[in-house]
Image 1 (cartoon, rainbow, N blue to C red):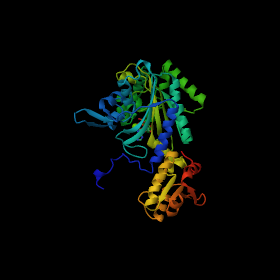
Image 2: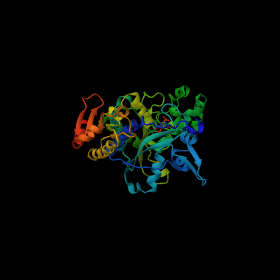
Image 3: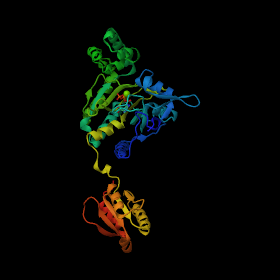
Length: 429
Ligand code: ATP
Ligand code: MG
């Protein structure tokens, strides 16, 4: 196929055999968030470039080199969103729904775009479910976010494969003091740092902490520790969070080097990581951003949130074989009809059954065909039962009810009794 007719590198089709697992995952998360009282918000996928520069930070990896930015026909600089928080903050400000201290507990789902090197678990169009809470500043809500994700991993059967890493970045003042101390220390060891870290030392020194370079890591061993610079308020907040996680029994490890890639975090930051996906081990990441709303032109408004990568979590469900059996079956019953008269009767019968059993997944054969070919299609559909309407059945006003997965013999069921019979045979999701 010519190159122009292929999908863009790093932007994937999600094929019909994969969508059941995606929908299972997304449905499980949506249901959980509903149950905890979170409401969905939907933002556009394109925003003014300025929004991301201002919120994410000019010197972050995302803004420096990962954004899909282009000029609109009228000359505005627009960007495909690389994450959801910026747009969510823009939306709540624009609609005034966090004004006067109103609490908002919001979540969103959708594609994000970053020009990264595509590899397993890292794509250029990827999907996140994210969540943001506004106007709650205590550790209790930080804890709730983590508790929800912990429950989610339990429901998905992947709890044993993820680990919670926690850190506190302090307030912007204490972070500023720490930054100074770190810069002073790293500058004294400038020659031993890798090139990337030397650059970051000038632009975004905290990011040096999560370098992958061994020499730089060696230098960091004796570097000043963030925890020693925390102000009392941040310290108390962090203790409050830990106490709540302990109360619920959620294990965590403290990772003083966890700084997150975005500029806007303060106090709590956390990541759920796994060793099951190779290098792309973070499946969910977030933290508190008490200064962001103000930085974006709003009144001071505390905020906290997280985002999880759907591709990585779907990959985990596959890797750990945590795929519920029922999601791969998409048809319960397949109706075969032979001859024109039977086809008409079959259509009407199918609609009657759908009225009575709205959740039944009933597929009616399309494209006619011989007995053999319709049966083959019924079998291939994965249905548990085939319904058969031929001349004999028409004459007696019955259907042939044939188990396709070896649960007994074919029997005849009167049209009027069919819905009730199906209700007893098919467990409906
Ligand atoms: P990473 O360190 O893996 O690049 P990040 O810190 O850039 O992640 P966030 O901006 O915090 O990621 O996004 C939250 C989550 O979204 C990540 O933990 C990950 O699961 C997912 N994610 C981020 N970038 C990608 C990508 N390019 N492809 C697939 N998933 C991604
Ligand atoms: Mg990244």
